[in-house]
Length: 336
Ligand code: KG4
Ligand code: ZN
Image (cartoon, rainbow, N blue to C red; front, top):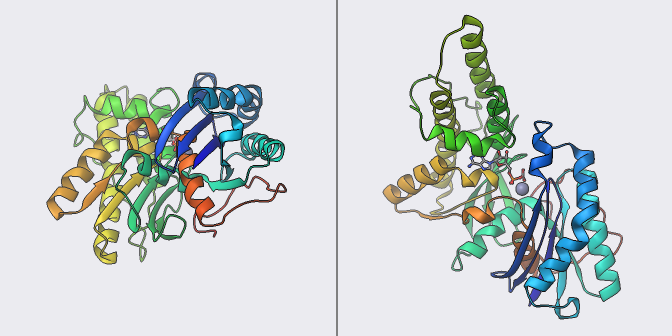
């Protein structure tokens, strides 16, 4: 079964054709990052305009690269939630138009479930149930994936998402958007124990995260050094911050795995590309005999392949939308 997946929830316009949820036939991503860099973050209005300008070319290219015509596609999957509403609307309306014209089923796909599905592409043997750490620019969750379409939230962030914390800290250091990647690279050169940073915990909620205190601590450290005119190593600050964030993520994730007695662990979302997170989890899972699955780095960020993959499982579960489907800015991962 061939599914066309369309993604436009943030700053990448993407489309892909995937067979049976696992085999990628094409994967086209038009990134707007260079333009948003000028403003230090995503400007929603610009994002919507760029999606509208390039979505038809991106979808056309995805079909061409897959050597597939629209008539050979079995269903159209589209990210309908969560994300920037104006950006989501472009993908949803385009997908609705295609579904109407081609009389193909329209499959609404939750963005975070799609991030999890990027693992089905990279790891052909992976099947639920498993425990997943979903860490992106807007969300940080620990999710129990009971099946491909049944999710239970075990832990969540109480304030900033992990990616957001990386981006804000990086911005204070004058690094360009999206700061998570630049910080990860810079951190490789630094000493992670040079700046003592807190490990915020949420009392009574051992699987929840709180990154805003950590972010404030690093911002204050940078500002104090600047005000005193003290020299500091950017690499050391990045390494210390990355170590602290990853420590919080790994600690809570492993605790959840132990308490819920799950030994198949999965990571997903933009922050799952973080090299320290991947390294530390690999070491910890090896020690404990857990199986760890990670998406290939090229599928960690937003893409259409993960949408087509998740849409396959949503379709099998009967999640087919009427043409009145709307985009939704906020929707929990366990909505259905
Ligand atoms: O999943 P994603 O592409 O978009 C959302 O759905 O939000 O995640 C983007 C986030 C950004 O905050 C970006 O800085 C972060 O993922 N990110 C990273 C790395 N690569 C991307 N954070 C830390 N280390 C990385 N290597
Ligand atoms: Zn994303």
